[in-house]
Length: 98
Image (tube, rainbow, N blue to C red):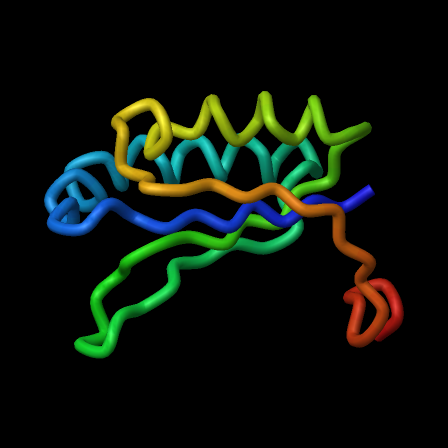
């Protein structure tokens, strides 16, 4: 099952995001190499600056998805104001359909 992790940064925490970004990218690279990561990227504010994240992963269940989300260096650094994890059904434009 695919789970989408929707994260909203705490206001005024862009410095935490930028300081932690190398570890976050390394974590996503690891998930990608394992075949767990489906896609990911930041949300942008009105000025084009990152203000949150969307990460789609494949996980056995919601508990496994939550474990992956909690291990993200951004989460460990206290960047997020909120995190929502939702199961998601990829219907259109799946890479394997192309």
